[in-house]
Amino acid sequence: MTGSPTRLIRRAAQVEADVHVPVAVVGGGACGLTAALMLADAGVECVVLERDALPSGSTALSSGFIPAPATRTQRAHGVHDDSAERFAADIQAKARGRAAPALVEAYASSIGPALDALQERHGLQWMLLDGFLYPGHSVHRMHALPQKTGAALMAALQSAVEAAGIPVLTQALVDTLVLDAGDRVLGIDYSRPDGSRETLACDALLLACNGFGGNAQMVRALLPQMAEATFGGHTGNDGSAILWGESLGARLRDLGGYQGHGSWVTPQGALMSWAVMMEGGVQINCEGRRFHDETQGYSEAAVHVLAQPGGIAWNVFDAPLLALARGFPDFCDAEAAGALRRRESVAALADCIGCEPAVLQVTLDAMRDGTPPDGRVFARALDAPYFAVKVTGALFHTQGGLDTAPDMCVLRHDGTPFANLLAAGGAAGGVSGDAVWGYLSGNGLLSAVAGGYIAARTAAALISSTKASP
Image 1 (cartoon, rainbow, N blue to C red):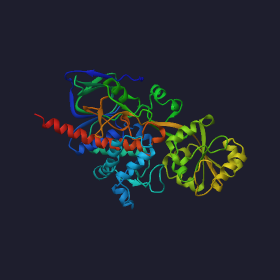
Image 2 (image 1 turned 180 degrees about the vertical axis):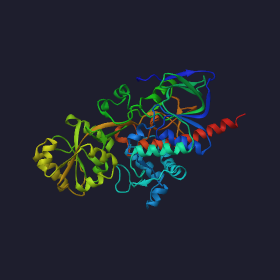
Image 3 (image 1 turned 180 degrees about the horizontal axis):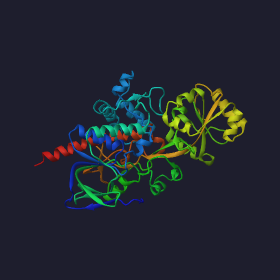
Image 4 (image 1 turned 90 degrees about the vertical axis):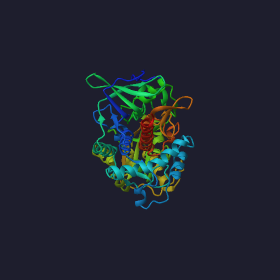
């Protein structure tokens, strides 16, 4: 397996650098910034290196929703029956038991304390999305900032990092890891926009640089079913961590796992909330038929939508569901861009979709009669006026990557850990198993925030032990 970017390993007995930092963090998304904040709380200095002019990554393109059990916010909303064990069971149920058990336990038990720490120590004020259940979750545990966007989450994390005085070096493209003969990381080499090159020495390194969704060559090789899909993630997801890992003899895991989304608004290029589907909306193809049970999840819905004629579907809903949709900024942006169509009758809706009115009528009647072929049970049928949004399936981010121990230390092929190399978030294998249907809503930010939280604790312990050594 190869990829387009050049990612190198340089061997050296020692590293010559003007700057030495205890921990270097490659990637300034939710994972990297969470780790940096937790390191600051532990009194450990770090530097975050970000390839872009402004940290954003996949987080800024997401809805910014994070699932977590037993948080202060959850309890304040009257949810007292959730636990790490219940969350772990939901993760494994969605992944059909194919998620790494030790990582599931680690993430499920760490994400609540991580969100509480970000709230108590860094001012991120979470709200609980308790109006509906996302696919696969048995209880209301999805957290968001009041703005309900990934961009707002990134802005809040950046503000917290600035307030903590943590240096974030932007426009720093890390392309080389420097290790000694014993596989201990000594530092990293990176390039600047003017072509100059710099080296940073470190005692521990965290790869928080996401997955390979933006690397078309790797997607074709590893996720052929998504080779022609729209990529809704960040182009910087170029597979750097995997390419470095291959060179080092690191073990990789779950490379067939990814998060798709069956509700990418086209041609406007925006994300429509799946809450509309969960609460009674349907997806209809150009023949006027439903083609899957929408409540199974938005990730696998991407594959179902792409399998339809032209890779297109229509999200169809009515006025009460439109009111729900308008509670999400992404939908409001899509509506403002002209994505929403209103039709007063089934015949007019059929004309919009391009299907036979009689076929569409049968599809909608099945909702009313409770006889849909896929077994989905509808609480009510849709009523006129009808609303429709044209969508396609998209690839958002990958869920496979470097295999890690539960403490986020990267593992070799033989299962032994590298001494001071860590990976988390999209750079590491997640908890969705090895297929698109294993993705539980929020697994991406779960692994980013919980992984960053865990990695910071591990790195802080490594630094402490290094200082204590004679």
